[in-house]
Image 1: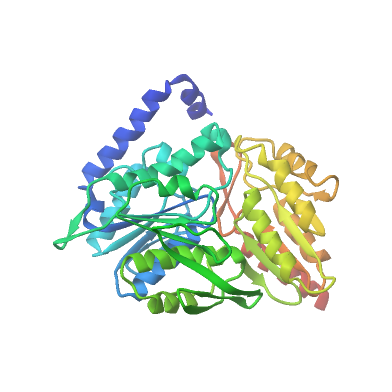
Image 2: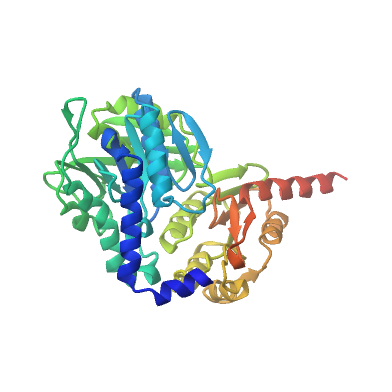
Amino acid sequence: MIINILRKLIPSFVINWYHFLLTLIGAFLYRFPARKMIIVGITGTSGKSTVVDFTSRILEEAGYKVAALSSIKFKINGKEWENTLKMTMPGRLKLQKFLKQAKDAGCQYCVLEVTSEGMLQYRHKFIDFDVVCLTNLTPEHIERHGSFENYKKAKGKLFQSLESKNKIINNKEIQKISVVNLDDENSGYFLEFQADKKYGFGLETGAEMPDIEQIKASSIQLDFSGTKFLAWGTQFNTKLLGNFNIYNVLAAVCIGISQGIPVEICKKAIEKVKGVEGRIEVVIKEPFKVIVDYAHTPAALQCIYEFLASIKKGKSKIICVLGSCGGGRDKWKRPELGKIAAKFCDEIIVTNEDPYDEDPIKIIEAVARGTNGKAKKILDRRVAIKETLNIAKPNDVVIIAGKGSEPWMCVAGGKKIPWDDREIVREEFKNLYENEKV
């Protein structure tokens, strides 16, 4: 509460200078470690963590020592640990310390998930990005940025960073590379930024862009066993679910190819991936499927629901659990989330997510309003999950969205309650079926 009051009282230019100077101090303290590695930055609204994971796997398959940082986990040269910060981009000192650790471990590449909030606070400064990628762009964090246009410009700062001087590593000049989703309607804006070479990716039905090296996917096959498609003259047979994961794969393959990695190695790395934690993760397979996903924006939820609707069997139902983050964040999207759920789902339970200092009942009411009375409202998220397991029948699909693999639920007073949707599902499923056997 005190921090929020201070933010309102202190002029914005003072806060901006504070963030900038702290970033500079961090970089100076750790001797600008990003200058000694090739830095890959992934930004966008959805898919960032997944693309970070896929990209790091491709680079590792090619024999490089790699560090990676996302909202899910940290990784340095094969050693991984969970990101429990409830923050995608760590604070300036922590971020620069991570880069120093990666450099000291001999990492040649570092792949970073880059957020608009992080760039507003200058966390991307003094990192010297060499490759940047846009996954997609849809409305998000509008109240924080003031408008979608401002949100887009914040993302653009990452691409603007390519205008810095090219690095020399091991007597070799490192090219500045941009990678953009050509099927996103905002792609033109990001392709305007200067780069030594530009790559684009998308589906075969999307727009063609001249003077840009492109990877397009075709002959797409989707089901619960995985996703198959052709790209770059190569057949990809992945264990990944959903049309959106094709875009994530293409983004990572573009980055790999931009670094001179053969498509065959990219394919080998991707086909080893069984999934990404908390991203359309199938937690229960039988007698019905239970999927946990991080989707928390209207566009991301629609992608998930559309995929499930396209492959569900016969008269089986889609049962969803959802909520919306609090703390004054993007209140506009709450009824939209409910509206999309009502369009695709047969049973809807709206529950608590991360209320922070907001009244969770009010958040739930706002989401439920969009369903036009179709939703059941349950405040306790564990009880909501238990209820979906109770009503699910064989072949139904339960989708629990909003938190993915996040290890906390953030409530009033800055408190964080240990939480994992996946573990809650397993516990309640076990209790349900053990009780049935008794």
